Length: 272
Image (tube, rainbow, N blue to C red; front, top):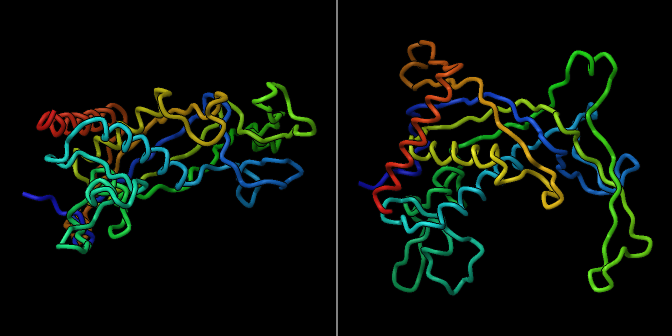
């Protein structure tokens, strides 16, 4: 039976994951050039505190999932990833999601979606996952002193032909200092266990250092870790009855993440 994708007309359940993101190395999410007297500043809120846009988190996690899923031929079980950047002359199924061939034309079919688009959305289906901006957490000492964990580093452009620094191409750039902690919230509508397993796997890839976040990652920046502290869940029936949802904390959080990973493993075993 084909799993429905376009199911936002009916709310079955929703989840909220809450936790922290800790920068083990310096972290850089750029805001463009020429601000604050720095060539390449980091993005900041109105109070001058750096934050991590939800789009940056979503993009890093989605690209991680797409790369891993493409390593298997799991189309029969729905465990595959489209390639929206492929040549337009390629077969529609490998180029983009949501298209169905009818003779010489393509029509939109919301059921023809890969695993990544089922989770993160496509041009015809909204994302089931919503990432909030990750806001900086300051210690009491930082609040007293007004210290913001941002530092300025020097950079220089290299002429790869001459193998030396280019003249007059020195620049400076901001980074968030190692050890900075950000609050993270992720909301999921109508979660499916095996798709949640993909999401949990992408969190693991960042925490283990195989995927980095932000810019200048080849220089060692962007090593982060997720620490999940609670999983809140509810259903439409509970909401309509005014009943409280379920909140998992402590060891129950990791137990739930492990259950989702097992659901993904079972899905993959169907075709691999």
